[in-house]
Image 1 (cartoon, rainbow, N blue to C red):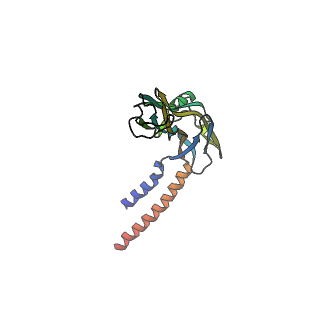
Image 2: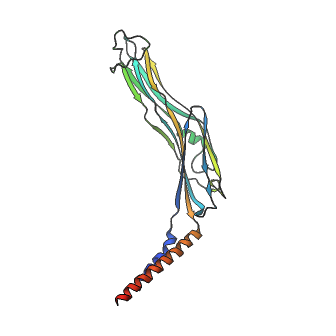
Image 3: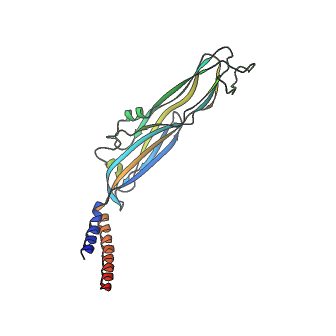
Length: 248
């Protein structure tokens, strides 16, 4: 009987160690350089049966550049040329609906999402005899070079968690809020000396925002779970007792 009593106690205490649940929203939009794009998020509905309050809100921002790649060629047979491959992004405007207290200011987020990088190449004199001037030629020799930016993430989350009141992230019933961003981004090749030519793709950009709600279950949810576990536990206890008794 002591084992059965311990089982009851464990089942009754179980609901009181129920942890909050993480609810995550991630939205993204492909950007056009110089145009404003907007993302819409759902506020936490305080009337839901699962939980009526937020323990915390975590927010992160990401400006992702990708797809920039170039092949360069020095068309000058008389001398070398320097080519500089560059990629950059700058956030010219940023808005965000709810509180960003603890995350950072709009200026800090704009600065954190900016990116700039470059790489220099020295291209030898053209190795193609009689090649027409003004045309890209893929020789594969030292008069050519290739460059690819890969995927670049300019990530900002500050301290991550919103501080102070979380009321602007929740509503009684359905509710939404917006965040918008306008970015200028580009990728290019600049030549210094020689007759340089290139071909390839310029960068594309994506704006991503992730918001995670840490939801606290309602007390009524805990009580319901407690009653369910009590009934199940009681049934299991009676079954166990009957088996022991039948062997006596």
